[in-house]
Amino acid sequence: MCVSCGCSDDAEGTVTNLETGEMEHNHHHSHTLPDGTVITHTHTQYHHREHDPSQLHAKIHGTTISLEQEILGKNNLLAAQNRGWFKGRNILALNLMSSPGAGKTTLLTRTINDLKQQLPISVIEGDQETINDAKRIKETGCKVVQINTGTGCHLDASMIERGLQQLNPPMNSVLMIENVGNLVCPALFDLGEQAKVVILSVTEGEDKPIKYPHMFRASEVMILTKIDLLPYVQFDVQRCIEYAQQVNPNIQIFQVSATTGAGLDIWYKWLTEKVTNSLQPV
Amino acid sequence: MHELGITQNIVAIVNEYAQGSKVQRVLVEIGKLSAIMPDAIRFCFDICSQGTALEGAVLEILEIPGLAKCRQCGTEIALEKPFGLCGCGSVHLDLITGEELKIKEIEVEEVCV
Image 1 (tube, rainbow over the protein chains, first blue to last red):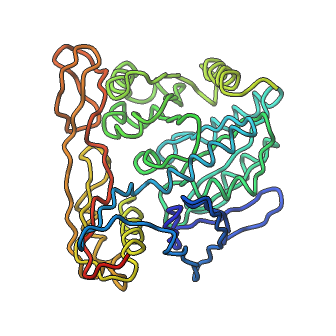
Image 2: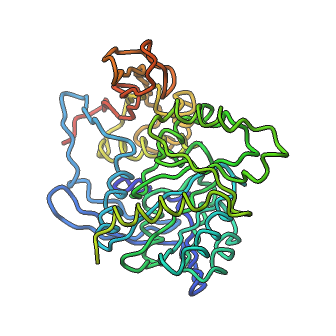
């Protein structure tokens, strides 16, 4: 595992570029050390060049070393670099998260089709296996890269960095990052996005926000999907909203159906306002 | 199961800082609201540390309780979950402690700077 970025050898992921069909297993990247030195190195499945230990400093008292090392700090550092990259290119990046089957990809394809005339959108797709979702996204005509995490249960900042190299999203655009379907782990990993968006479907049970509070606490927006199914399922919308607001009093909630189109205008309004507010005028 | 990746992180960070010395003890601070299960970290630690400077090291985990301050009335309240309800009726709480995830210190056999 790379200590300076937190990415691991065995759960490093595979990046598939849907434009070129190329798959990339290895990656190389740069780190800036505290003294300003920049080290570029390569990760492979079997080989990993360690950083020069002399660049690392520990405060030693007797035999006890005080570290105060943030365990997720390396991921957070890379996420900050991604955030800077987005800012420099005037890209609004959103991290879409949900349990498997909540309807992320359906919502995404509908959103892209409805907004592609006004908003250039590209996508990084995260799944453990297959490029199925990326193929669905590609049918909309937008740029997409699939990241397969293998055994990994979430995307991390280093995977996004690699995905960005392949995707090369245009300046002044929107990047949708569809995370691995999982309501637990993705909440912990900052990718460098401007906002996290959690998607919950009415087929899942209204108490999900209090069952998985970290996810709903971390999100700026909750999109309640599949509301066209409400007549057929037992789901108390009001209670769900109360639970979500209990966990996160500031969360914005949109009720939508990507199938019928109901409620999507409010989501689109939020998205376009976010673009206006986040991005610098061209 | 993000704990496996996090344990690999802990082992790799400590291994690098130890700079070849054998590690006897690792003290990790985990907040009770951090969504990290200490038992899962303990479970993974022995396996992840095999063949490294941490093999055989004692893993100590300091669990930091959750504490929040109510934005409305200023009362500090203990939390078991990353959200809650203040006695004044407000759910607007600022977390003070409970989200920690840190390697506090390590103890090595020899001092090697």
